[in-house]
Image 1 (tube, rainbow, N blue to C red):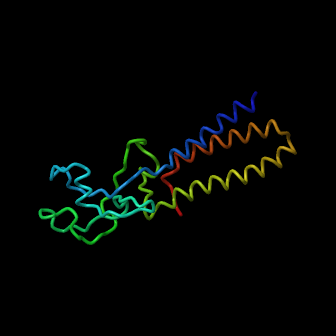
Image 2: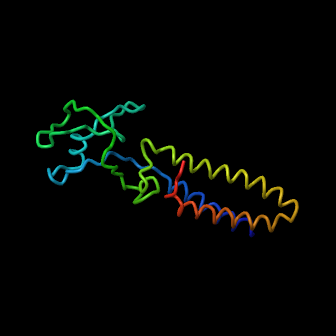
Image 3: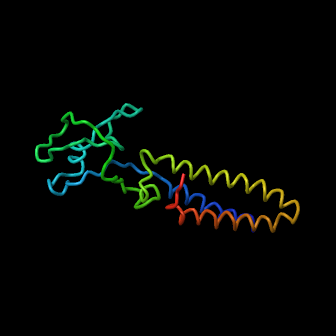
Length: 168
């Protein structure tokens, strides 16, 4: 019975990491929308370039914005030059209020940080499986099982609190 209970609780932090590292739809934050009384879709039409994705759908750029210098005479669909996001990002909060990539702006040029974080977690799991597997033969499988469940749970929870200190 202890195998099932601890396995269920050990999986919850793993799934928590996947949900916490989700990158929702995002676009460049361009200040001034409230000054001109535009809806979000009208503002995107004016300030964000459109691209065709690999499915053939036209979408707004996630990482570029128009380089608008004359805000009083801006026009939708005008051929402005594009630049990288200058003022941060806005996120679609339909499914998630806040995730680690939203909080840290791990999008566009920093998007690999999410992948690297998940990969490092998997490498730790593989090393732990090897070490605890060998240790199970020496001191017994039941104590090692409980130790590994504790290490996994504590490690996954610590991942959430130390997400701000990404130095790679």
